[in-house]
Amino acid sequence: MKLESILLGVLARHPSTGYDLKKYLDNHGRFLRSNTQMSQVYRSLGKMESSGWVTHTVQQRPGATDAKTYRITDEGMTVFLDWLTGPYSPPTRFQDPDFSARITFAGFMTREQLLRLIDIELTTRREEVARHRFRDRRQAVDTSAPFDEDLATLVGEWAHEGGARAIDAYLERLEMLRRVLLDAPEGAGARELLSLLDAH
Amino acid sequence: MKLESILLGVLARHPSTGYDLKKYLDNHGRFLRSNTQMSQVYRSLGKMESSGWVTHTVQQRPGATDAKTYRITDEGMTVFLDWLTGPYSPPTRFQDPDFSARITFAGFMTREQLLRLIDIELTTRREEVARHRFRDRRQAVDTSAPFDEDLATLVGEWAHEGGARAIDAYLERLEMLRRVLLDAPEGAGARELLSLLDAH
DNA sequence: CTTAGCCATTCCACTTGTGGCATGCACTAC
DNA sequence: GTAGTGCATGCCACAAGTGGAATGGCTAAG
Image (cartoon, rainbow over all chains, first blue to last red; front, side, top):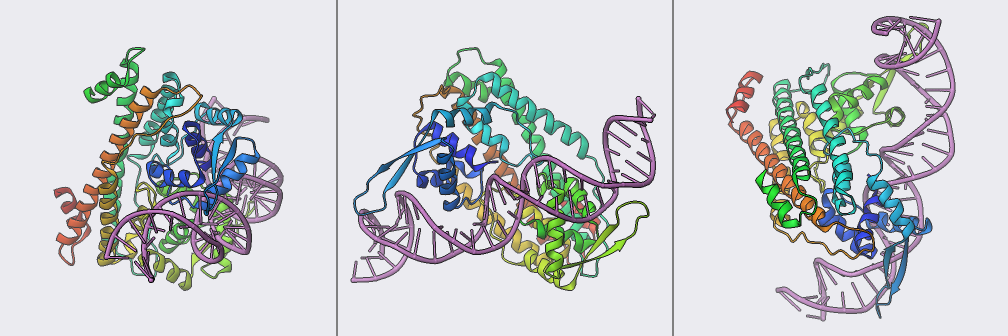
């Protein structure tokens, strides 16, 4: 996940200062990235500005540091939409934020594009499960340090079981969203969509 | 999550070549890291060797590239155990692999160390839930690009609900493991521990 | 009155990771 | 036979992220 894509997505919704973006990443966007540094935000912003993807205007704050409000340009919007609706290659870990980062900006997609994205994610994860679920999990141990094999086995089984449940639940939720999108009539409003979600 | 810590952990269990380590990362270790490059593995190995954390011996493979088997040194073991049992600061995203990376090497911990780790993770995530679960999720939209607000609302609610369930399930599993560790008698073997796991 | 936290930006040295290329043997499947 | 995959290492340019410090005014709590 590129920080730039997230920043572009936020700026595509509304103009922000670097500080606002950092706040976004710490609050609403905290599932998209851990512990992003201020410096990283400002550096990305600088780079994107020199690429012509964003521009800024200065807000004078008498007595304090001036605030720069960044806005996405048409070119930036093109870059963002190309990323958002372009080819998606799922990362190895389903917990990685690549997929959620994209659907965070679902408002900029059509229903068809969203469905394509979901289908890719679904088939990838299903394959993953098929390949790894019943694989041999034992691992050789040959160490001079004290090693508690019983504890290792317990924790290993616990982790495997938990991982399996997590991915199963994830698949079910993806399937549910997919069904809602397919079942919903063309011009369904938010209320109608949400009640379909509840129904499933 | 440092690649180095994972590599040290694997080498602490048994000697491996760079290629083996890469295979580990693609199979058993695929939940610890997405898409690690060969070059990255070899570079880390080189750096760790010059720090004195690992050494290598050469296996001649007649006709093919020589294989280097890496072994952890006493110093490397110290560094690894310092990381493993040292202070843990949970990342923002509970899906990030920091916690699982540590418990992957639970065999090198005592039960008490493992319990401390679990307690830190538990209290952090509980606080996180308390702070964010019922927070206002609405976001301003002020864009010139086409934006489907109904779709955005649907997906936003779906994602929130799914995230909430995921973290709840995670908390429950952590609590369960904690209880098993507390309930198990001192010298319990693997079989006994696993049946306790099933019982919960 | 003072401490703490929020607003806001910038710089810097450094560490990590990405993505691809080159090399070359052995074995299997078509 | 030849294409693909697995074994095995290493080099390179570049992109991205880390972790901190410096600056300085504002507001609210104690």
